[in-house]
Image (cartoon, one colour):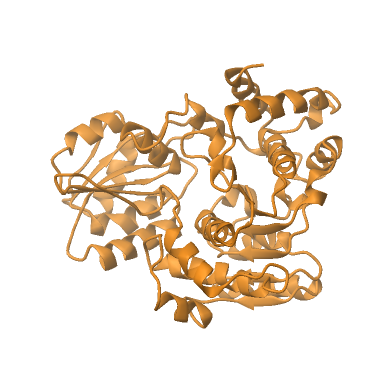
Length: 430
C-alpha cells in the first residue's frame, strides 16, 4: 500500500457517513489492543475554540518536556494535520502503515455497522500515540461529545469551551440539547472546566457534572491566575476570545499540577509560543498589505471575528472574501460581518455542501443595502480581483481557509486531501 492508496481507502469510508455511538470504536480499539488504556488524555469539547485551546495545552505541556500527542479535526490542507506528536505531523509512511494494519479488521464488522472514516481515524490516532509512548494526549472531539468516537477514553480532565448553536441537525436545535451532547464527555469523578456562559447551557453542564460527581470549574474571561499571567506575557493567538480559551487551558494545568507539575515560566513561554493556523492568522506582505485568515464558520465565530477586527484594526474596513457551507447559518453570519466590510466577494467552497456564492452575495446586500457584494467563480479569481486591496479578510468555512493557505503558499499541498473532511448525515444514532 502507498500513501495515495491509504488516502483513497480513507476516502472510501465516507460512504458510511457519520454514525453516533461508541460500539464500533470500542470494538476497533479492542482489535488494536486497546491503546487508549495506555495513555493519559485531556478531552476537549465545545462549539468554538476547541482547536485553539488544544493548541495552548499542547504548547504548555510540550514546553514542560512532555511528549505530547495532539488529535484535532478538521484538517485545513493535509490529513496528517489531524495526528501530531510534539507538533510534528504524522508521516506519510505511518499513515500508510496504520491504514494497512487496520484494513483487515474492518472485515469483522457487519455491512450495516461498518466503521466510519472518523471512527477509523480515531483508532489510528490512539494506536500511533501509544506506539510513540506519548506522556499526554490533547484529544479534541469530532462532533458533539456524548456519542462521539473520541468518547471511549477516560481523561485526566475534561474541557467544554462554550455552547452555541451549530450542527443543530445532529446535536439538537436548542442550547440545552447541544449542551447535553457536549457534556457527555464528563466522566465520574473527573474534573471538568467550562467557559460556557449561557445560563440554560450551564445549568445542563452543572447537572451532568453533579450526577457524575465531577468537580466543575466555570471560567469566564481571563480572571484569577490567567489575568496575572496575561499581564506578564503575550498570547501567541490574536483576539480577545483567546483569553477565555487560555484561561480554560490554564485552569486545567492548575488542576493537574499534582499529576503533571508545570512551572509558571513554562506556562508563560507556552502561551506566547502557541500557533494555530487559520484562526485570526495575520499575513503581512512586504508591501504592507495584510491578509487575515479566520475560520468563522458559525454565528458565534463571526461575532468573535467582528469584535477582533474592531479591537485590533480600529477604523479599518477590509475587503471580505467569504464562503460558507449550506448547512450553516450563513444568513446570520452575513448579517454579523456586513457592517465591518468595505467590499465583499463571495465564492463557493470546495465542498459538496457549499452554499451558493450568488446567494451569499445577496444576503450581504440585503443585510446592508449599498454594500458592494459580488459573487466570483472561485478563490483564485477573488484574490486576483482584490490584489491591490490593503486589507483582506478570508473567512467563513475552514475549507476555504485551507484552500487559501495552499494558494498563498503557506502550507504544503495536501494532494486534494481537504475532501476527507466531507461527511453526511449520521445513521444508526443510538
